[in-house]
Length: 491
Image 1 (spheres, rainbow, N blue to C red):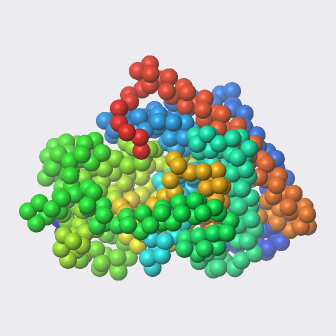
Image 2: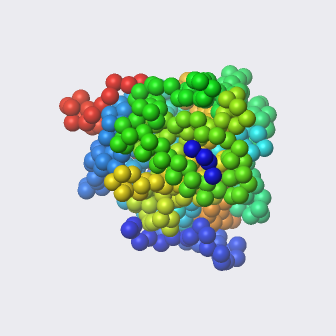
Image 3: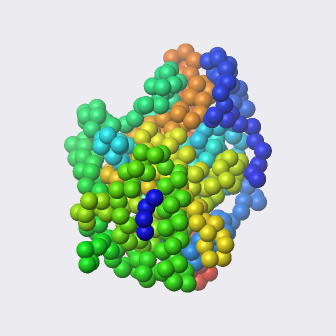
């Protein structure tokens, strides 16, 4: 291979050019708070006609690779938190039943705490930001923060933390979001765009606030992230055979091209991948194409990834630069309709892969330089959309399975800052800040911040109960044999 119909709802578009004066934008925020009060964010009462959670998952699974669905369900069945991670569609459907502020941003769509992490910027600095964009699309800003605080509460429950400590973590998350949004509302647009969380600076700045144990935990995570390169991926996933790099056979997690039976033969599949990568090149700027033309194709494999993503079609493509010691491993991942698009409005992109890529570029402070999109038709004439990125680019995450109470609060605050930054870049930070209390006297603004934190803490607690009920029903269906479930390790 040579590498050469959503509901109509009021909204403030993230790309509108005339947003008005600062005073007009603040007035819109206050008007939104009058129509959809902060206190209303606390409420969670399921609609009488609420669609069955499992039915939504089954509907989503119908468009995925059938033989991988048992793996998806097995990973989701590991815990209530794993179930939550894999069920963005359920919470999107639930949030769509509530009143909205009408202030639109480029929503993440799946902004749970495990979808934030660290990665290397093009300047090779380790930054902390959102790292999953499969569901990104224009949507209400509050949907993202509600999903984030729900995940903090559910993670705390999984770790066995007390109600007091869980609520403290959720309130810290909400307050960090509000404070960051207030800061962004006062900054110039270009300053907002360039703002980012450099992890070395973050650790140094918050060192005094964190215990020695938490500081060491974060530094260990940073060290592991820096080691996650394409060379390391090759060590774990591939071998050198006859002077050529080849992926290992580790079904069902990793199935090389030569062993894949989804097409009539491997020649046909190989041609499809050539076409797919060629279209990917067309989505890249000239300098990126120039760089990638220095690499030679080695091998490809189907690779199962994530929890909620399991069942979508995903490939790993192995390339070599100067020699086998200079590898580049790319991920080609299927993009489907966003859950935000389904319950809010269409994204405006006919190509789901482009939706993901353009959304990521809008949201992230610094994106993978090789990020692009592509598509290919299968033997039945069906078009599949994909996005392409580096598989490992210094990517890392904070270990939530071993996190302490203090660590959960610190991580929640980092996630909240990154989320507020994404919303400030793509929405109206002045309007959102005014909704939260910008422009009020200092004492009243402090009370408004506390009211926002209390409302989200109440919502997170109630929605975590709902998630546990949905998880219980999900596990009952598995136990009754109504859902296929593989005996595989969790994600």
